[in-house]
Structures are given as structure tokens and as C-alpha cells.
Image (cartoon, rainbow, N blue to C red; front, side, top):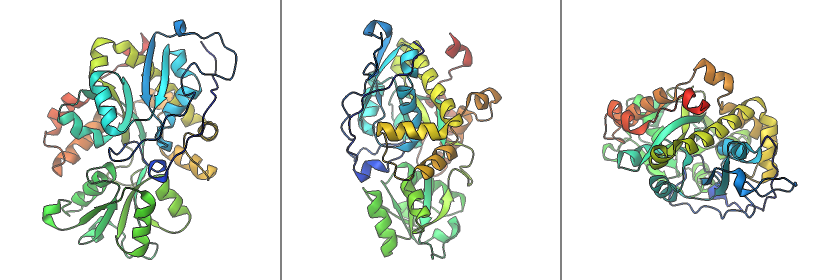
Length: 362
């Protein structure tokens, strides 16, 4: 089935709270309704595909408007899931829905950041199976702010999308590395949650908060407009530079009962990552055409999607980035600040499922 499949796409009405979500989906944020036509066998071209062409059918949470979920959109649009024998239906799902689906096996795979780590610790049957991309979170201040580094944040107020969410965790790790406690009980910094990124930016502008920890693309759009200045970019700045911020998670139930389905979907996603790394402009065009994310500045979208450093086939062959090492690194960091209770060397045994190249070549 080496055919490129184009779909008839419905209009996606994405509100701002969803537009600027990253790989993690806040449980308090409503997900947009799935557009009609988003199934792997819906096409505007005449094809010979039937249900018999597929070995598996799977729901894939992807319709959250996030630019950094691009491999899921591209794997779907370029027909990579279909080539691997999986009839995929793209759906909307908040974090709680994803956890339930992964736990019971109705959702085989999803993308997410290390916000999922506490869920694994608490018993949700899901494992990291691969890395997705780097970057996508920034800490920003007003252009004329004197704040330059983590040490300057002591006694200040930081805006986040949710307490315990990934921007909150990123800020906490950065603070703790600088010797500042992120714990509310310590009183060294104050976190304030905003359900809408635009409201967070307005609070920063008005002086209600001193720093905004934000997902892209909103942070980068504001930076390009000159309304904010970045003090931490996890794509390029330590201790996050060169590390996956977002991962692919697999259902333990499916990994146990039908691992070949997971392998097939992972192969499709890897094809998409390779495509994006080599064709960022074409990938952005596909995302715009499909209305997967509302992108007004195409050049910025290309810049961002390139900065996420989706692993190419060559990158994987060189083993220049190790998913297990990344999971171990962040589990140590989150354990150090008390966000995870399990020691990292124990957590990794529960949180990471090793899928070898040999598994994927079968």
C-alpha cells in the first residue's frame, strides 16, 4: 500500500486554550471535537483500500492543535499508518481520557511529555517507548525586565498553564538547579496558573506575574512580535538542551497482548519524524492544509518545527540521542525536586519499555 493518501478534512474550530497547548494535554482543558473525515480510509482519491487491507484499527489522540505533534499528523496524511496495516482514527482526548485508554488498551499509543511520569508512578499501565522531539517550552519576561537568569527569580511570581504541568516542572527543575526551592512551602517563588496562554501573557504585560512559563508557539509568536524576551529556551539551554522533552508512550496491555500493533504504529511515526526532519516546509504545508494547527506565520512554524529536532533515520542509526537516558535524566531531576517519589533507577524499570531495531524489523 505505497500510496500517499489525501483526506477530506473538516474545519477544526480551535479555541486559544487549545491552540497553544504543547504535547501534554491538561486535564482541565476541553479538547476540540474531532473533525469529520479523519480516518485512515477517508480519501478524496479513488483507491482500492478496504477494511481487509488493515490488520489493526486504532484510535490515536492527536487533535489538540499542537504543532509539536506533527509526526502524528504527517504519519496519518502521508499514509504511513495505512502502509503499516493500521486503520487510524484521529481523536480528541484530554490527559485523563488518554490515561484511561492507555490503561485499558483502547488507545495503543499517544504522545506526551514527562507530565505522564507521575501517572506511571501511581500505577497507570503505560511506558515510554520512544522519543518524539526536543524543545517547545520557554520562560519569558517583559522586554525591559532586569531578569536574566534563574537566580534572579527568587521572590518572584511565575505564570504556568497548570500547577504540576510540564511548564511548571521545567521552571521547577531550572530553579532547583540554581539553588532556589520551587516548593510552595519554601516560599521562595510563587506559581500562578492560567487556563489560557493569552491571559498569561496579559498578566505578564500588566505586571501581575514576573515570568511566564509557556508552550510554543505562543511564546515564540510573542517573542517575534517583540512583546517578550526569552530567558530559558529548553531547545538550546541547559539543563534541557539536546534532550527529548516529549515522548511516545505505549499501552502496557497492548505491548503484552499484541506488540506488533505498537511496532507498526511506531514505524509509521518514525517515518514521519524522518520526513519532517528532511522536509520541514512541506510538513508545515501539510499541517496548514489539514488545519491541524492554526499557523498564521508560516516561516515561524518552519523555524519551530526545525528546532524541535525530530530524529531522522540517520540520527537513529548514529544513536546520538538515547530515549532511555533521557527518561532517566528527567526522572532524576523530578525526583530531586520531590515531584517523583520513586528513585530514578527504580522508576526507569517501570517507565521504559525497550523496543529494539530487531523488533521493528520483523
